[in-house]
Length: 453
Image 1 (cartoon, rainbow, N blue to C red):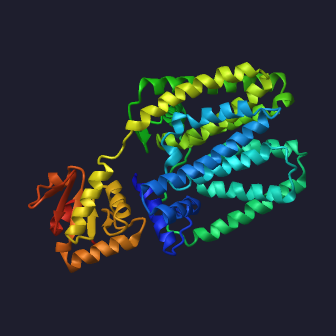
Image 2: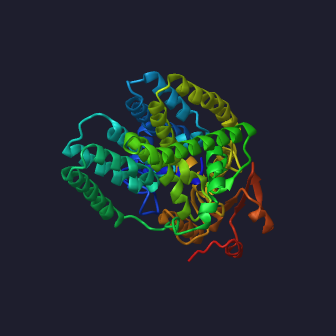
């Protein structure tokens, strides 16, 4: 697992020990309690490990998929279960979610299922009550504090529901009460949250518009880690091209209906607007981060379901979805060899075992993934700090510093890269792919920018 997954795993461990953290460690945003709670539940039965983390996230993603199916069933009238299953299978085999359907990133797999539940409620035939609209406001606030990337796509559907239900003032009041009450609670909770990590993600960034084609292509390919993009198999590239054509087709039909039969296609136009809004916020992105487009595929498939239902041709649904499903299955198979870590779990555990045998509990880790991987996979039998004086969990920095000042011989520097090797220290050891230096010299730590004060 990557460093952020390990942090969420640690949040689950601490939750089981009685410490409740609402937001991702070191942040005043990224509502993560749902994800850490689900991991804690799986860990209770299966122990705290990467399998528990992955299964917990897959469970949340599956909840989202179930409500996506229920939404498609509402759209594809008269209650066309077979067509709804085809749309759902098309979603399941999307390369874009191959990795992210099981990734604990802090908010993403909270926002996705809640957005699916909200979308199902908005498009269902259930009579909307005061409490229903209040709950809609609550869900929207939770989504916003979990991962606001889903908000632009949800807004057109909210407007459709409010207009379709008679645009009543009482409905708006109920929504506002639920939404503002939730925002107030989150605002109060933020006052007790750390703010170590607060990057500038959104700004008016005109080059982001010109970066959209490559960002979209990289997102659909899904062969990336954070902002690093890797080469993908040709079959995945082909899938991505066809999906981009699908998006363009939806937008073209929407423009056509705006000028020919606006009210007769109001729901589809709102759905296409949802797709456009989700693409549109790319102009505000500061980084080339393909994960920021994760909401796009779901909104695109909802718009597709509405369009296919409008065209009312059963064979057309099969002709569109089945090729994507078959191609998607092949694409997903290619991810069996997808890796982004420099080392394997087996190599990591060898390093942890060696440190434990040497009774070395406190470690300096120059590599951020290594820092959190060592802590999580050792279940905190190894405590690490990075090269910054501030970090997501400040007590780890203090613990390593105090241990070094008390007994440097019981501390070590661990590094899977060549940074430590380049320093040419004496007594450098190598355990699998990890360089380890016990009893590091103060000057070496200073050279590696480990600030002790």
